Length: 134
Image 1 (cartoon, rainbow, N blue to C red):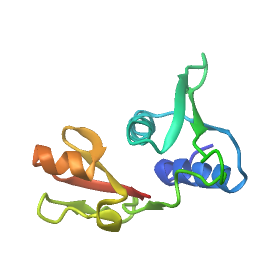
Image 2 (image 1 turned 60 degrees about the horizontal axis):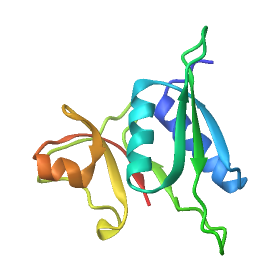
Image 3 (image 1 turned 30 degrees about the vertical axis):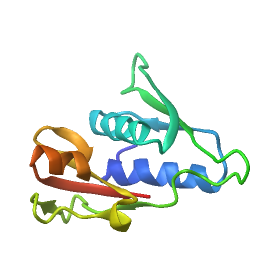
Image 4 (image 1 turned 180 degrees about the vertical axis):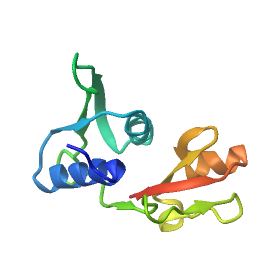
């Protein structure tokens, strides 16, 4: 299936899996989705992930979602797509967004790879704001 916005599809699949209280969600793989998944894992929003290559397809990303053991609340409260294929949103270092006064993260695609807003500030690079996570 061809989607016009694969990152929005990625975020929607995670959002729907959280609402349905699934433990694992499978998403078609791409390099940008793999990089976003690594950032989510490093920042503690997902429990684990695995990249599986299939012989005739692009592969699959299996993401184990993270829930609080007592309250069963998800670690991800909201996933919000910022830049879209029709309207890209680029920011410089001075205009870098702060999500929930630093409690959330903005995931950026920069010339040095996919990273969070805090990492981009320390490396002094700007880029395209892909999404907000909190």
